[in-house]
Length: 483
Image 1 (spheres, one colour):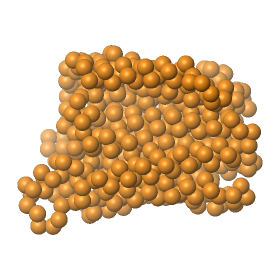
Image 2: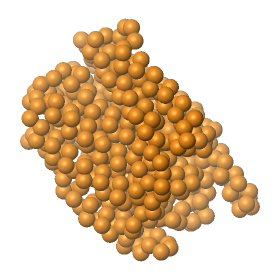
Image 3: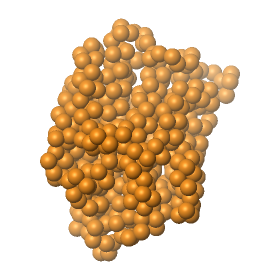
Image 4: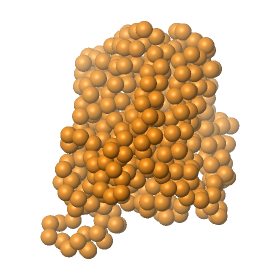
């Protein structure tokens, strides 16, 4: 795979390529800003003040609004068209990035990060829908999604290191770097074909309930970290009530935000659970290790970024091999293998002695980052292949909501565990153990993926078998002569 795939059909390859590059740049900055800030947290604290709770909100202010609005953004994408939704999201994201870089205090920075998360939420599902529209051929689409996933891996690789390097000049530079990338993406988006629109009613009850539930969960866990775990926090009680309201609204509402067929889909449930476990492990690990390495081991922000470099750099080059592996053996092998390796890596990290050398930590962290291309790349492709085209936006919204909710809750819970110990090491070990358990559970769930069709099976039987399982994506790639 030496170049972005071309497409067949009415779209010109130039238009499709411009669409893909715009979507890739959007996913790049979304992923970058989820990770680049973690390494700079001590510098932000030195400049603007605040304790662990304030630093948690610098990250979770972004992640929370991102997760809370993804379901709405998925429905909005189907309603107004992917191109308009993506363009609006990118414009909001760029403006908020500038506000983050100019923030005079911690409160303004947190609010600007929330606006950033709003823009990211609009971009995420629309970027995948743009790819689906630009590449109607399943084989070409699978390769396009591989490029989209690779961009996230590259951003993850660049995040910690660039955060540490840019912080040497000023932590504000980590936000200003988004401006030129966003402008280029908007210019390329102008060449994209117009997206179809659907008259999709807005489920206001479900959207508001989802926002309150996710906000209450995150705030409640951060509050628990500051005040200590004890009786249920008010925010957590509110979150549970809102979650019940959301479930009732989806089950009995006339126009539910999440269509019933998606709720009943085993593919949707397994994909969402896997995304939750992966991003909880990745984001939570980067967060706790960024604080541990700088506060407990005395590393600088740049040295901390370099510790994550082997993990993220290798993950950045696994996109193409993973696509080929999936085409040959089906999605079960890379997904289960990636999640299992992540769980093993986190378990080992949780049991290492406090005297373990930093180079050993960097080495054992590698499988955590590699889980992204190994597990999430085929999961994303198969999910898009499985759901009906008119539900691609909301399906992407559900999938990415689960991912970002995993990140937000991991940072909230792990931050609370760290805040309850004067020594960070016990909280770090408990956090890693929780993340490992989630990864192992997701790997076990994915064992239910059906094996790829045997050679010689009739196409009708193969298609019927694929429509019931994750095998859809790998089979379509093989039929399309995936490279």
